[in-house]
Each structure stands twice: as structure tokens, then as C-alpha cells.
Length: 200
Image 1 (cartoon, rainbow, N blue to C red):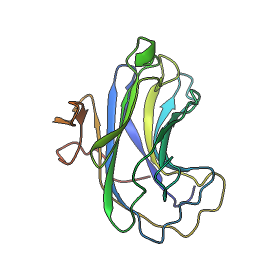
Image 2 (image 1 turned 45 degrees about the horizontal axis):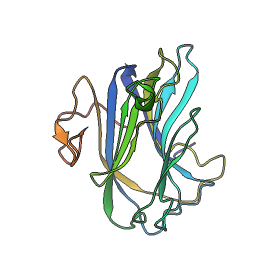
Image 3 (image 1 turned 45 degrees about the vertical axis):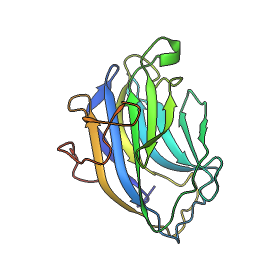
């Protein structure tokens, strides 16, 4: 995917029973083209299975950036069930924040396990999925965070965005903030949770 996006290894990896939060601020210039088809990959947490192969991504996509329906969508690959967010369009020329959380499990809350995916936009909880197995098998792990990655096998336009305050936290040092519903999240306080030097 060339210079579009990047990735950060999660070290140590997050096994079943673990938790991970990823939070960042992003500024979309007015010139930005959301033209990837069918949707633009945004925040991605990768599942590696026991044999080292790909167990699918836990994904947040941008769908209809300029509208108020189907603005964002989430999926766990292999599980392959979408959930859609209707709300404010993606703003241009201003900062907004996004945060993704996973409880890592191969059995979803709905099926008697603990697996869950949450997404916040500007500290408002917009997805709280209890149907999603965030890993495909009990021995799987979350091993990488990806930002954007590739333009769905198309040539990306001459785009640029600004990203700041990227924070990753795990169950080893969980965030102490709580959202309006009492859920632990990173939110606006940037404590000593950063364990990265930059994208590879």
C-alpha cells in the first residue's frame, strides 16, 4: 500500500482474555477524496491465528463520508456481518477523534463469551458490538494495528490527512477514564500509555 497509511506491531500480542484500546485524532482536509470502493479502510486491528496465518481484521470503515446515513461501518472479517452508523458527516478542516476497543475472545458476548468491539467518535460511543468474535479461534491473537493500509487494489488519489495523539493501551496498563456509560476508554487524557515510535 505504499505510503498510504501504516502499521504498528502490538508487542506483546493480545491473546484471548486481553483487551486493547486505540485512540487518535485526525484532520481531514477539504481536498480529501473518500473515493475507495466500496468503502475506505480506516482503523484496523489484525487477528493472527495459531499457525501464523491471517484470521481477519477488526475493521472500522468510512462509507458515506458526506452523508448522514451509512457514514461509518464495522466488521470482523470472516465473521462478515456489518453494522452501520448513521450520524454526522465526516467533517473537513477540523480535528475529530476516534477510538476502537476490543475484548479479545473467539466467543462473542451474545454467545456466552466476552468478545466485544466498541468505537467512539469524539468520545461518543457509536458502536458497541456484542455479536462479534474478535479472534477466529481460541489460540489467536491481536498482533498489529493498521491505519488505512491500501486503497482496495485501486490507485489512491493524491490525498493527505493529519493524525495526532495516537495512543494504544492494553489490559497491562488500561485507561482510567470512563465514557458516559461507565466504559473504560482513553478519551481525551493522554497519560503514559504510548508505546510506539511511529509507523513502519
